[in-house]
Image 1 (spheres, rainbow, N blue to C red):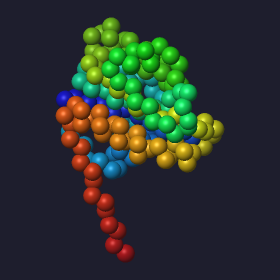
Image 2 (tube, rainbow, N blue to C red; image 1 turned 180 degrees about the horizontal axis):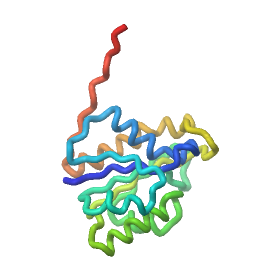
Image 3 (cartoon, one colour; image 1 turned 120 degrees about the vertical axis):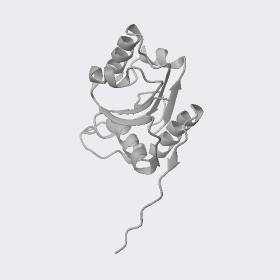
Image 4 (cartoon, rainbow, N blue to C red; image 1 turned 45 degrees about the horizontal axis):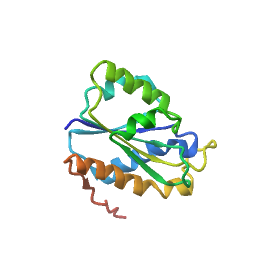
Amino acid sequence: MNTLVLGIGNILLRDEGVGVRVIETMSERYALPAEVEVLDGGTSGMDLLYTISGRDLLIVCDAIKADAAPGTVIRITGDEVPAFLHTKLSPHQVGLSDVLATLKLLDELPPAISIVGIVPEDLSLGTELSPTAAGAVDQALTAIIAELAAAGIDVAQRSPTIEVA
């Protein structure tokens, strides 16, 4: 299964970059099979068109505005995804919505799309996640790994490296 796990966000605006930070952590902690690509999409928008095109599974991780406490992990799948794209919950949603609409017109839309988001607490200038968002990274990773497992993709946790002095 040709899969893309895409982290999007602006890492210069603290929790706005949570999607990128989650996939960075994923790459550090997990060994992924060759058919799974993990990508920092930053704030690319339409530049992602050909990267997403023709995938079997797309999992997007991003900051999502919602009526929930900061740090809440929100998972959107299946028929909920088109409804999500018609509401303004993510700063990157317009770009992502445009990319997915274009892919649908080209008949290149991934048949399975999931969105895993974290409700941000702090969108001020800075490169570190707020403690609240940082505390939700593991839960977001668990949701992404569950999406991969549901698609029959096994992900192995990397062995920790031991530094010798």
